[in-house]
Each structure stands twice: as C-alpha cells, then as structure tokens.
Length: 292
Image (tube, rainbow, N blue to C red; front, side, top):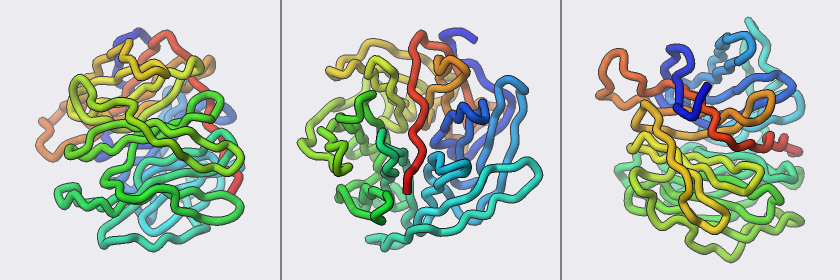
C-alpha cells in the first residue's frame, strides 16, 4: 500500500461512515447509514463481514467487548459482532429530536470514554439548524451544542484538550476548534479552525499522534491534513468524489482507512461508495471505548 488511496474489495456503501479500528479484532468496522448495515474488514485475512441493523446508525464506538450505536431515535448497545449471528441492539438512551425526520450523525468518544455525537435533519435541502451535539456517559445524556445543520468532523487532540467539530452543510462548510474540559467533558471557547477547504465540504475526520487533523473533503475526492495551528500541509486524492470519513488503523496504526458515499447518479462500476486505504507516513491513536 502506498500514499495513493487504493480501493479495498468491491463493497459499495450508500453512505459509508464512522470507521473504527479495533486492535483486539485487528479489523475495521463501520456503518452504511441508509443500508442499515455494519461492515467489518480484516486486513490480515482480506475478509468482509456484514450485520443488518433495525435502524440507520450514523456512528459507532467500542463499548466493552461490543459496540455503541448512535441510531435514529437514540443510543443503542450491542454485544460483540459474531460471524453468522445477528446484531441485536438494545436502546440505552433516548433523545427528543427538535424536528421531524432526524437521526444521529457523526460521533466518537473523547479520550476519557464519554461518547459525543451530533444529530441532523436527514433532508439536507431543508437546511434546518435543528441538530445538537450530545454527550453520553455514566450520568446519562446531555446537550452540549445546538444550532447545527449537519454536525461532522468530530475529533480530539492527542491530549484530549482540544475538540474539533465541522458543519458539512453547504451553507456553512467550516470547522471549529474548542477548548475541551477533560474533567467535565465540556467544550468551550469556540473559534474558527478551517474557514473553507480548498475544495469540497468538510466531512468526517481523524487526528494523528502529532495532533494533525485529517478531514475528508466531500464532493472533492480529497483528504486534507491540517497542523494543530490550522495550516494545510498535505492533500491526498481518493478515487471517489464524496469521501465521508477516515480513520487510522492497522498493526502499526499507520494505515488511513477511508469511507465514501455513492450518489444516486453514480455510473455502474464506479468506485463511489467504496472503501479505500493509504499509508500517508503518519500514525493515529486507537479509539477510546465508551465508559457509559
């Protein structure tokens, strides 16, 4: 594998999102949102596995030996994914959406194991700022931010003291940084981090061990790396225009795994909706498991 993004297999997702590398499984797991499916790829075996879900899951995170799923009407937990066995999520926390037709979108755990995830109105054409950023921990669910259209790009610096968040809607398409209180799990001091990408809209993101922020440029077929100071220093091309989210993984945590979206007008056989990987010469951090 090189610094060019190479397609893995021929899997096609409607909206591939929230890839997570789990060292105990030596595999990436991610969600196809409209497909209501969890996928898992084991690089050492070259195998794909799949589990049907009862609802759309916008994001996932490790939880014990199983998983936390941010779905349509709340947060769900499920046990370990076993080949040949169904995934049967059970709701552990409900939310009261601010508008009709909403679901959870991008989410992940902070360095302390609190799960943060945003919600959105599924019809992006409505441009409704009804989305919220929620925090889930042992104390339950709390609202951290409101007035979001399509919350995305959630990530934390290696020390956990900086939180990044984007809004992918075309009317906003920017990324913010926040100071993050690691004792209380509260973001504050919001400030611009990326006003606009060179091309595309900001979507899902990852952080490397040096604090670099890797953001998918949806509609542009690009993945960008920004320094902690907000300076663009690397750009990688992906052979799918609507790149959705990236995550570091592999035995040395040096492989960047990238999901994408397949638009309705995609040509037969086009790579859109596929999953890709590259080795960009950086290392990431394994995701913290949920403590809730």
